[in-house]
Length: 412
Image 1 (cartoon, helix red, strand yellow):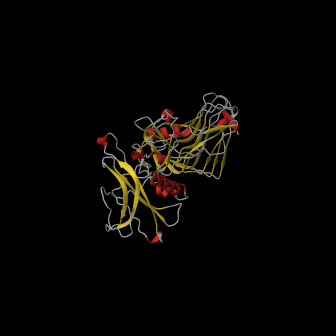
Image 2 (cartoon, rainbow, N blue to C red; image 1 turned 180 degrees about the vertical axis):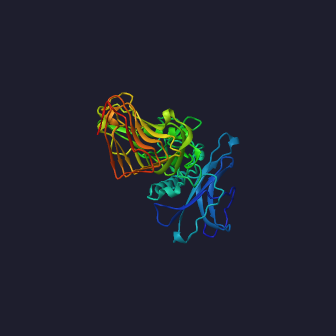
Image 3 (cartoon, one colour; image 1 turned 90 degrees about the horizontal axis):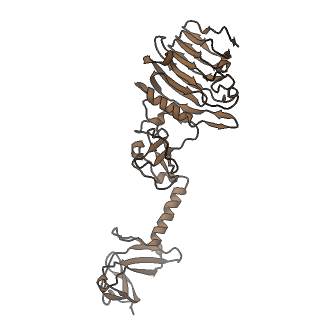
């Protein structure tokens, strides 16, 4: 039996660091100290235990139920957990310090720490404890562990770009192509981090050059095609996905825009290099793929172009060519579009029509055409009943604003 005047154990056989030291949650003025005797130590029976402070002084002593602590050589080995409950007058006055060389965390300690971390993460400002993935290159090195896992990416390439965003792991997706972080990153093991896209997409997510210095023809087409996949159709109406450009893009070959599914919004500039190669002389082919009935009368809530500048030089390149190969004006989803607050400079013709009829009628608002030969050239095509309107627009420093070559149709 211990006595109050003891300064040491009667027969000390082993001494080790405290493994856990904490205030008891369920007992006032109780302190819990835990030690673990390793499996490779023993060959004796434990009958007494003591607790020493930082100066080596014995501050607590107790007898202990006879407990055999064998060595593995005896044919049986085990770790021995010893927990001491101390009742003190003032727990707050104690400085509870655990040695850095903890070798084993108790289950209670781990559970408590998990609860603390969970509470931090679930707090309104919990994101500050998580940190951020540096960029897309770093994201490629991070393997997700659970379906739906999310990660915050700080930038596409460096802190100066706007390629940041949230990505999540989609365990069900095995087919989406890697587009260098625009919407998807495919890891070497086939797992996919996918960008959280609500509706609008941004060119800056892709990491491409938006200074207008480098030719982005191929990459820009990829972004247009990917954007079309995010359009939605419900109740016979297709809602376009919006691709935002806050910068400058340079192109040198004809690009195709699915005008039934994609809207392009700025403020941004697309520079059409006059030295490029353009299919039938047009920089952009405006097509359609939605096949719902009477689509000419829907899908018009979002301007196909808004707050954009299209620029070239020498008046040698035509800009837009609208064509619907079905030849059915009623089912032309790229028809009756709106262009809002856009400006065009340095082209031969800004817009001309192909097959598709009056469905190619457009409304142009608050737009300007400068140093272009023609704003619009209406050609003779099957089922061609063209409807156009212009409101608060300016045509200056050019040739004829409208060239109408449509003897077999009507123009409203």
